[in-house]
Length: 425
Image 1 (cartoon, rainbow, N blue to C red):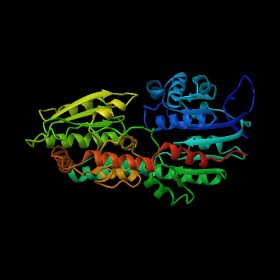
Image 2: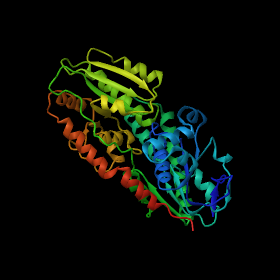
Image 3: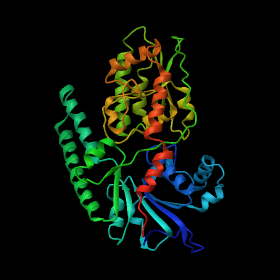
Image 4: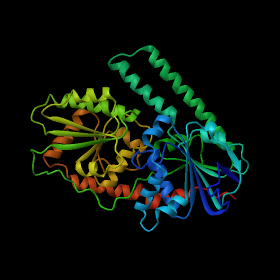
């Protein structure tokens, strides 16, 4: 049966009882978010279930250098999250292979375990080209974000600039051509998926599930999961003290499309906020890599009413979630899932977000699980209600946590994912 790369127990040459191949993107890093968090959680789950896991990923050289963790540290972290399983046992069940290109990844045929599973994550064609010629393949594919949807969102923003500020015709044409190319690529991708008989398919975004189902009727929705936190975040804002600064959190790599739109929307909000006297003091905390130009644009809005602190990239987010009063994610972007928002739900911290971000989430209700705002005026109104105690932060945070337990709990969703991955027979 299919085998990818070297034997996991190369020296002994023995057949293990259970084995998982995780063909993925990115690195293994719970602090990296997105693929890094997914890879870490999947590896930890299957190792603790007795599987030997071989992780094979392709990522940019610079990205690997910046975000990857040594296998020994990954094993150490998994042992901390799963007391009772020694690090040595975990390391004996884990093999990590990182590549800069799929061209350097070789395949050969051999059964590795009595139970063998293959999970492909975040792939829109790269890994499928590697496995499509293998007879008898059985695997589960979790599709990555649809590139056509990303480019369509870019066209929407260009259209707004046409209406508001004007934009070059060349930029609009380039954006439209990229959108058409992405649509063609996805059509070819879906055709390739249909030809692999033992391949089951899912997506993580409810919105993209709706779009993909038109092409692949058998696609399913895999529910995202973030780490389980035993204790909900104690809301630290003193709502009886109107003089205290409201601490607002923004997390994530600030170079992504979603983060860029969020930063732009925040900049517009800050500019308007500074023109309105008598409003509560705000203290923004930015956690994640930020470009110098973005930082300078934001810092231009520093004032007596607005302060901001940049913490750069960080593996451990607990302190920031416990320090801040709400997570802010405003902007007009409907692609993908919202890991930063889901993580905030898991901590029981209130979330203020634009309605566009609801496309990547499952069943959040405004003023119950989170607070929706579209535009600077609505965000200002929410902040004023924060300070005047019109909004019960503890209730919003607790409801968000319950939503997370119902829809994003790894203790439930990881078992569902395991059942979706077929055994190679």
